[in-house]
Amino acid sequence: MPRRRILTSLIAAALLVGACGGGDGGADAETSTGVSGATGEIDRDGTFRYIFVQNPSTLDPHRSTNPWDMIFFRLAYDQLIWKNQSGDLEPMLATEWEFVDDGAAFELALREDVTFIDGEPFDAEAVRENLERAMSLPESAHRGSLARVESVEAVEEHRVRVNLSGPGGNLPDLFSSTVGSMISPAALDNPDLDQNPVGSGMAKLVEYIPGQVNRWERNEDYWDPEAAQAKTYEIYAQTASPTRVNMLAAGQGELTYLMPQDQESAEAAGLTVAPSLSTTIFSLYLNAGKEGLDDPLVREAIEHAVDRQGLIDGVFFGAGKPLAQMLPPDHWAYHAEVTPDNTDYGYDPEKARELLAEAGHADGLELEMIIPSLDDHRALAEALVPMLAEVGITVSSRVVESPTTAVTFFSRQEGDFYPGAGAPIVDPTNQYQRNLPGQFANPWENTSEEFVEAWNASLEGTSREERLPGVHAMIEQDKELRNVIPIMLFTPPSAWSDNVVLPEGYVPAYAPHFRGVGVTGD
Image (cartoon, rainbow, N blue to C red; front, side, top):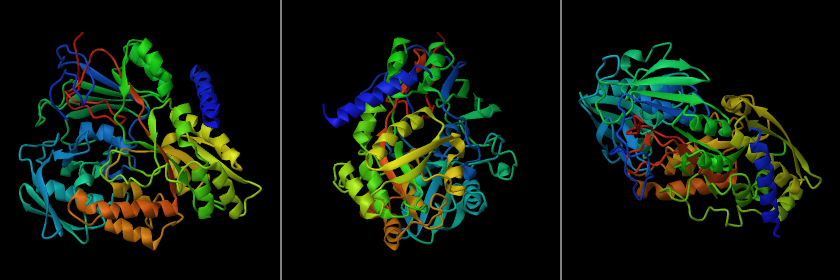
């Protein structure tokens, strides 16, 4: 039996033992691009309950460093631009947008029928105040993303102009994310905005118990009356995948995502199960400032030590695709030459041992791994230890609370590396921005003039096609730095109960939205 198949079998067996302990539109059709849901009549007074692994890190979009918060932001806030499930951009608060003056500015025409839940009107002044706060707030997570914005003007009541100091080709995608989530201008200085959001979204927060549940009620004055098909939305926090299955089976929820090894038990419980729509990428985040890892030969050796397909088959039961870059194969900017099949990036333990010896570690190297306290991260970490041991890297590990991982690793610089799941993709520049100087995720300043030049070039152009050469150059320069080693696109199964009604073409995502999703009265 080949070594990979032996490894896969052993990992799968170990995980099975461990598991025993532990966009918008119609509502009912199955299409070629979607999955089926219930076909009964939607109960407009019903409650839809989603079970996720965590509550939001904050409900203030400008302070959010966790893109998973978008699950909650899409209830409370509207975005300027909507990114659909195919990754294409559609109107939301902005009805039209374009680059003008040869790319020197970006203009958006705005909806005229939107009001925030506190009664404040949505207009160009509201957009200006939001973007200026995101650029100037000391705790803002988006100052870097908006660094090329020189000023924002309300040129008409419902038309806003964003003046640029340099290329800004990523703005349309940015405005579909946290950056584009609009807060009521009257609430921008509210001290409790982190737990009391004031947006124009389809639902209002009515109860928030951190670490347990948050409850929302439909915004009856919402500009799109078909968006909120349930009267109440509840999002529960539960880190254990088997428990999430049990909650759905017991009628305590309608939708969740699972670890792949729990798919059979979910199906046995009568739940519908299908692969999640996902752009989430598991990677190894390396502390390039630590002794040993400060050598690029060691970082390259680690990449060659990782059997990506073995991890996918053995840990995640086939729910993923191997990657050597931070973009999935169907993304518009995917670099077809940066793959695990390329000998520069693929699995090669012999080459890994040679590189370690060349770096002066022929007798081995000891590293500490930080493990976020989530079941999928733990499983991945456990499988990585023997792979690294095979090439001479001995790993000690310790578990940290998932929400504190970034602070532990990047702020306090504890640990040598950790396995992490990159959040849903906003724009390619966001995936690689960590390599720039002065970034929170690059406190050791491991960068290069070539990378900075390529990152800047990736912003040039007013269309995706025009930006592609710069994006590909950025991806190539990232592989020279290896601050992060991408492993796989993770496509875990989603499970839902038989009373869930899904919009036509809707695919439950790893980070879902709930527009058009409802429940029957059964």
